[in-house]
Image (cartoon, rainbow, N blue to C red):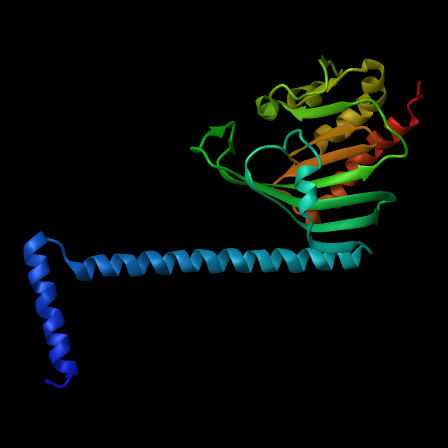
Length: 251
């Protein structure tokens, strides 16, 4: 029996590669190199995503501690709790870095919501509607149920389809009307909530957000937002809207 020789094995492997290159015109070494490079790039991307996830988690924990809130890594049921946009679309939906408690005098639950659209990339008015999407979602508890009312950014209007709660309602504020469409069934309630002063406050805020009153909750969502830098500002903008909604006379 012939004994195994490492040098002979290497030589035979090299001869085999040369024969294969002559036969099919391809260079196995080049193929293997490309595969190794693809694997390396994939590993770097996965490691980068994992590192970003850890960093976001740590930032959310610090934010919760600073404001006396509770933090949860994730809460799956939140992604199925509402049907209207930004919920109810896409795949691989996640609700993570959930913070809840009293903030700015209100009972809130906020979380980072993400989903994937498995379709071709489409850019609409500067907003990319492909692959990964994420929002900062904030849910504010109200004292009692109020009529449905939503403020939708004009550039996102078609994303909502036919799920908006009623006809559009004119708002007597030029800048606000260029940015938003107000939609609801109770026009008196809408005008009591979105006064000229409140419309101006919303229009001046440099936050890519929308909001909706649903029963006894106010939902706000900020495109690509994070709790640590946008939750408090969005609550400050929303507070007059909430007070006006709760102060509207009930039938």
